[in-house]
Length: 186
Image (cartoon, rainbow, N blue to C red; front, side):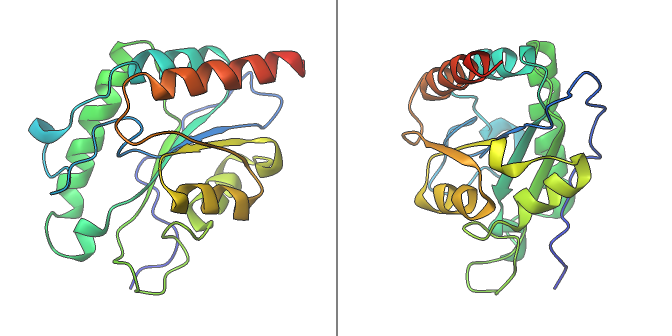
């Protein structure tokens, strides 16, 4: 079994980010539609309404945006690591074309019960991202749609926002809340 470092993409430069605050986002149910049978291909990846605009708003704050996601379908043999990278490449291209910028994608390939430190609700993915970027987790935000997301964020010391799964514009409202909160503290 692999260790907790499952960095999908090397972090991009965060020049201009003096605060070392980040926004962590879950993927399925927050950025894209969560499917009962999992997202297994580019054709099955469907951005939620408002998600691309939300990521652009967060990008404009000049903070690193990091995606942290459980992807047990790799551990179960449903898709390969290469297929997941293809899906993530597609997601990042579309986000970039719409004015967003993702610093990194961290994922856990393990099944529930494997005992790894990276699978949410454990904070391993957030801690790994914090080491890569030199982030202060206690000032960062985590937006997810599941109790396990909320627990991971809280365990890491992040401020957490739990939004409804697959809800149109939920991430957009969360981004607006984060933006207002951060601007008040400047």
